[in-house]
Length: 326
Image (cartoon, rainbow, N blue to C red; front, side, top):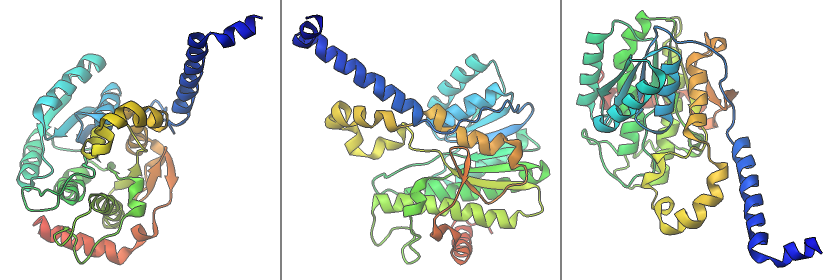
């Protein structure tokens, strides 16, 4: 009779169903967080730059590096948000060696100024983490006239990295970490319209920029052979961050009410999204590993297009010309 009474009580029944559903969702969420970098490697005394680090994956990367004793430079566009994040991290980690510095990857002038100021403050650089990015934004251009996703995700980091290579070489063994995406597997470098001037598709432009990240990583690795500087790319996973802010569907009433609760169990938290970055930056087993691609703290293969060496050289030449590196 107790069982039947329970079944007849609709409020209790639905509370039970809801509780079970939430419990299952939490279990799925835990399983979907992926690999974790749980080695105790310290980073005491290491000087590290993390771009786009006032929120999301970048912020969690800085938090963990600060816990491990690193001297971290947060290279960000928004100084107010950067300072708020810095204060939070310093209070939590008790590491005062966390600094905010202006670096707008959509401006070549800003990148040059950041590098000049950094070199006045630091004589070496142990790790550069190219984390910042924009995704599927409406078509807009950078200060220098480049399509925003290509300009920030690829060209900005291309210039920043090359301007810091002398510091990285002086500090060898040192590392460069490039946060790319699984989206690179859907990417295509539009040789005829790289800057999306003839036509623009926000998804294709994003995929192209992420493929450019991997091509850049592989080409740079070849150029750095014998220098003691390594460079590797990675996919952080599908992470619940502000990167989705330009996708109107994710910000709609329908999405917040129905869709987001459904996909929530399958999204990584920013803390877990940062794990492969930390792995690529700190794991001792990767001391001599370069030109590779990782996901969930494991080596993964890249898309066939990312293995096109001729295309990588072409992209490098165009990037050099557009950023006026030479």
